[in-house]
Length: 401
Image 1 (spheres, rainbow, N blue to C red):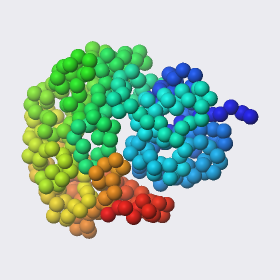
Image 2: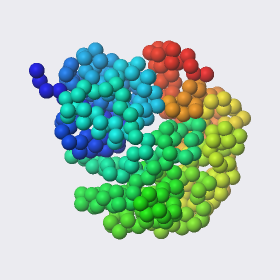
Image 3: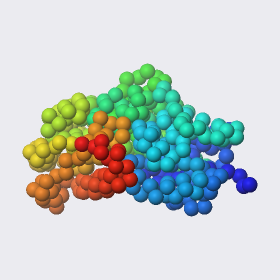
Image 4: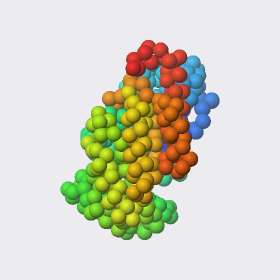
């Protein structure tokens, strides 16, 4: 009988998390070799294990290969935000094992069990208080050097967002960050960026410094390493509008190379922002844009349309808000479509698709360069997902309203 093989199935949307997962596995003593695959692992057989980390939007594409591997007797393991928030659904998809918490803890426990000859358990919980500073996304098997995650979790718990599902905010220590910067310098990288769901709320857990000093120390460490491009306050380290002021703008202007910042506006309707639990109003968005422009930054503004029960007048108010901001400021409006994510307050809510007249207005605003067209692909994604869900899991689909 041949040895059991372990595969990590990397998808296009999870490729930036793969180096960290691979590194965790590689640094677990006795862990069996990990095979990284970017396509369906057709040669996996009965004795093998295939691990998936996936996003909700990928499920219609992955369903067939998961079913095929299950029929071949392959042991399937699931991780990622969807699996963490909906473990029972992951099992219904065909997974034998679900990592229900931080990958650093869950994956280490999985690898340790296999090293000891213990079959995988049905569930591997994480540690909600885990300090993730000791792990870096540096893998012997994957050359990709992703943005460095420096904040996990969020205190704001917005109704549409899954980040809060990772628990209370935790932060990577500055010494860990310096280790990654040193590695990037050794491999002659010239660009550094960071994953931080609220860029101006990063706080170094080791020094006890406040947020502004912590961010300054972070960016100064990057500058001292000689990086030509230091990106912060732009995706994937967006800024909450109520947190940005002229002092923050001056600090960013001193260090970062990006001349755009990304701010999460989400809606131009005050009532909607309140229902989402955003903690800010349209006026806070405008104040942040004004401060950023005054400091030399153009602003990428993220908006979400198609939110549950969104009316045509409400959508019109958001589009009016975008047009008004365009007339006064230097902005780039990125319009996305709502997608219900597990673990969020809106996880079983149906979107309110834009009506015919709103679609015409959206199309015209795109043609005039006032908004992006991401909302179209997002609308297609949610329609495709709900169609798949209604066929494959009608009971699950019946809960949507």
